[in-house]
Length: 139
Figure 1 (spheres, rainbow, N blue to C red):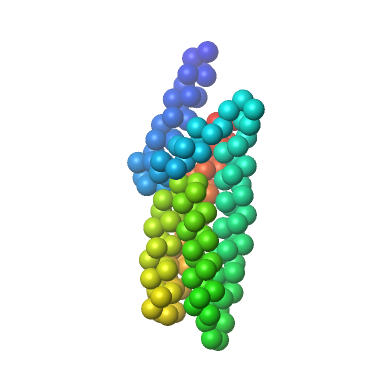
Figure 2: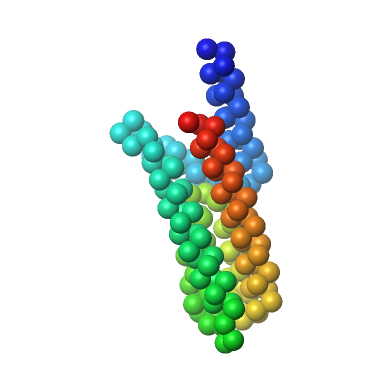
């Protein structure tokens, strides 16, 4: 029994660190509140869809920014989608980079867009690893 209490404390501490470090915000909390006995994998399923969607969008962004004549409206549409999906699961740091990214799209600043793409990939990878760890600890 003491082991379970210790495990729960580890889980709670790790989860708290994700909020304290700004990886997650209240939206993640709201997602967790929608999960119940009838749908015990709800959060994992929603987050898995976020991972799939984000990876597709990051690839499309890389391809779009690699074009000779960048279509900034297309790039902005992808960033807008990524911002929305990261916002819907509470991936706060990814969402913040997307806001800056959209400003560079508006300015048609390729260098700024490329920097933001690297930054958003970095933040996405961090939050993905952290969430995967969180789900492993909770199972």
